Image (cartoon, rainbow, N blue to C red; front, side):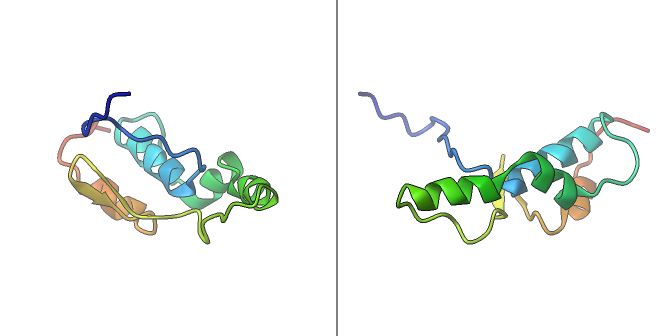
Length: 95
């Protein structure tokens, strides 16, 4: 087995904050137009509730929240402030 510090880890939990981040990028590049209810879409697509139930049945401890902040290419993403994150980019598809 080889350990590579540059390897991206895999996290099988459906973090709804990741869905929110993906939506910000889709909006950034013009794939989504207008207002987005990030939280509602994330919770309809990333079924953390079902995952928490299965984890509990397996004797695992699920996270207490499906939202967390994380860093992408050195920029911190706060899922509670998706529009602020989106506005922080100088490069985006023009309207």
